[in-house]
Structures are given as C-alpha cells and as structure tokens.
View 1 (cartoon, one colour):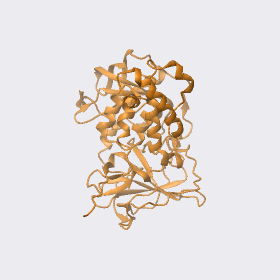
View 2 (cartoon, one colour):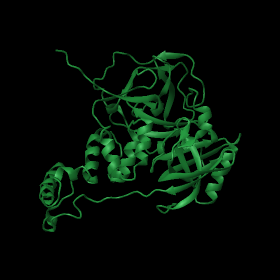
View 3 (cartoon, one colour):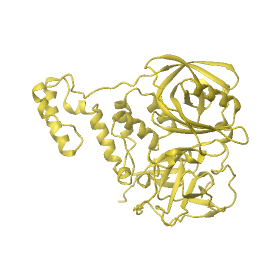
View 4 (cartoon, one colour):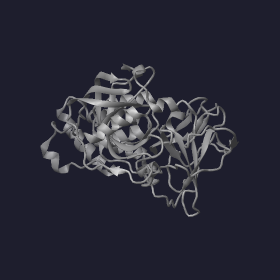
Length: 418
C-alpha cells in the first residue's frame, strides 16, 4: 500500500460530482419508473438489431484515431520502471480502457509511452492508499484533441504487476519500479497421477454426458491417490469454467460472448459481474485462474439483486443484465470531462427517475441511441442513463446503463411465514 497524497488524477477531481455524460449537473427530474414493477420476470427484448461491436470501438472519442500496430509482451518476472496512472476503476487483463486526458503532464507521460513500448501501469486507489497490484495497459489507438489541450486514447489491459517502489522525480509524474507477475497455469488435477490404461476413455467435460463419463474415470484414478475424486474436481479448471458458463447462459442466449478459456473467463467474470471493489482487488491479486474461478462461483447465485449504494433502493436484478457490447454486459466508457464510468447494461430497472432535459445523442456511447440522466428516486444519487433508440427500426427500443460505482449487490432472502 502507498499513500495517495502523492498523486493527482483528473478523474479524482471530477469524479466527486454527479454529472451526466456531457458533464452537466443534474437539475429537475421526472419520475420514469413505477413501483408496480417487482422482481417478477420482465420480457427479454428479442429480435435485436443493434450492432454490439459498435460500443467497443468507442467512436465517440472522435474520428481518425491513429492506430498503433504490434503487441508488447513483457517477460514474466521482469523488473522494470513503469509510469503509473491511478484510477477509480480496477483494470483487468483483456479489458478495454478508453481515456480523455487534459492534464499536460499526464499527456507528456502518455506521449513518451507511445514513443517507447506503448505501455503504462494502471492501479486503483482507495483512501488514503493505492494498491500494490495493478495491470499494464497497452495503448493501441490515440488522437490529440482540438481546441483546449486534450488527448484521447484506447488501451487494453495486458499483464498484472506488483509495485515494489515509487519513484516521483516530479510532482504528478509518477514512476514506479515494478515486477511483472506471472500467470500460473495448472493442468488437470489427475495429469501426473492417473491410470494410463484409461487415457483412451477420457473426454473433455464440456457437456453433461461427458461430465458423468469423466467422473467415472476420475473415480478410478483417485484409487491410487490419498484423496477422493471430488476433492480434485474442485481444482479442475475445465470443470470450474463449465460451472461458471452454466450460470452465465442467460447472457450467451442474449448475444453475450463469454470466454471459454479459464484464464480469460476468470478475468472476464471479475470485470463484468457486479463484485465489490475490495473483492475485485483480491481477484486481481490471485496468480492462478483456478483460485479466481473458485471465488467467482460464489457470486453467481441466481437470486441476486442490485441496490443503490447510498440508500439501498432496489435498482436491478442480475438476470436483467443485457449485453449491449460484444465485450460483455459491462463496458468501460469515458465522458467528455475525462471521467471513466464502468457501466452495466440492463433491459429493465426500477427505483429511478429521469432528468427533465430532452434525450441527447451528444457523445453517446451507443451509436443510434440518445441518453437521459437517471438518478435514484429516494436519494437522488446519479445512477446512470436511459438509452432510447433514435431509429424506429433499431432494437431494443430502450435499455439502461447503470454505473458500477452506484450499485452494490444484495442477496434475496425470502422468509416463509408459518
């Protein structure tokens, strides 16, 4: 842990204000949701025509971004000096990070990154510390803005690292000595202790019938080991991945792209499922997909609701998540003021009200949709936006984007009356 007082970040300056996607303060609101809606099933939008690849392009950053070709891969275990940016978000490998920067010193740092290996470090801050584990981000597109000094970029999370020492030669120019952390990959638990005579009968446990066949073989393998087969199955990355994908079938049915690779899946779940900030930091700390998947399964219960982080008003339900981005139901976007919003899309929410201003397409993260600011009806906390199609042929007609920082999860506990 390191003291955050050394660092100044534009997102920290703007992030404390409740603002809409264009940076305007919320004023008058009008009720848009009725308490008559309950946790009963709401019809899922069908025949959707929206191109879910569009939000991942972040076209709102402007045209003619310069594309950087190639890929930077850092050796596992290498020690290096890395420029750092401190953000509210927790960046995971594989996650896209769009940014708009106005701070001239940070712009200089990023330009130097582009001249070298295009890589900087992204770490999350708490209060009053930043965390030692972060993720390298590789810039793959950028553009210098017009008018006032600004810099737009898209970066991709690559590899985890650990901060060993902070070097701050100048105020607001943050350099750290870091170690790039390896990702430990373990094979099937019976790989080294198995009956070779049964190899021709082994199958990959991707289907229910294959799972049962493989379990019978594993029961025989376990005879020559100190532990029963069920113990080893808890450490099988293929089986853990299959269980998680079964929980996430509702997203795949709605057009979501859930990774099959255990490593990619473990990071994808941490990014896209609503997990509290400290838990996400713990997931980033783990160096093996098996450990992450074991912990993530606990979050994928069926009856989970999302409530306002301030007053616990019911906002949404996990089963109402709806992917409007090919990268998953959560997308990371940036508004014109440079504030990054991790936004989860739902086809139904409740307990919210809308601002009285007309829907706007300015800087819309979803091309073809106009946004209206949404706030919690009870505490007036900014929770997200309602997106309305501007084309009569566009489906879905309406969906909601709710910021991760405005929500927390809450298990449903139904007590039966005697």
